[in-house]
Length: 311
Image (cartoon, rainbow, N blue to C red; front, side, top):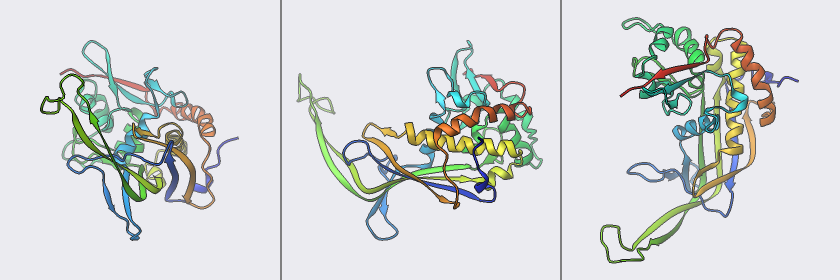
């Protein structure tokens, strides 16, 4: 029985919240930023401090990672057949791909590689002329790197006007958070008197505990429809985004050594009347839908474009 997505037909956004908790104990380690450390700020309701556990940038990468099978060097099984760009070196050895690269097809290993001209040609970009995001960029991304339709892209390697915002955004926050201070010592068993970090080195360590940890997901349904790629593609992009969310909550919550979380509950906060499908339901629906879109020629002649990167 096909998954019922009719509750999303006229909704501009799909908003999802997932309650998280540490797998063991109560402490967690938030993400850190250069020259800043953890992002900590006063809660708008005045009820304590909030910690940014995972940023939107990092979550985009994590939602991509759960889609890739490192051992097989391919999409995970339910996503096989989706288009992406593979990068090889001058000897034909695989280097990376557009699913794993942080900037997707704008990665220097892709946009500066031999063979990327095919993507530019498909986009029909001409300097000095108006560029149509809907008519030129969206179909090209569907053909070469469908992941960029979900997580966005800024092709500044080609031109500063070729950009697409994220369709799926996510972040994790911890509310009413307090510092759990601890520390330790790195021991030198041979000569603890050595200087410059080579002897005994005591250190301080800050982790956090919080009243609540929540993962937030925002899927821009209106943007998906605005691509104008047809009903099958709209359904595919929606289910692909839901797969990423479900897969991440099931398998991707070990964010760091000291930040291993579990999903304690998931809820749709908008629109009313939509029940989030289970992961196995989404996995069952995707292969047939991928083939349906592919049979329309929307993935091009080859679903994997190989480009050659040489220094």
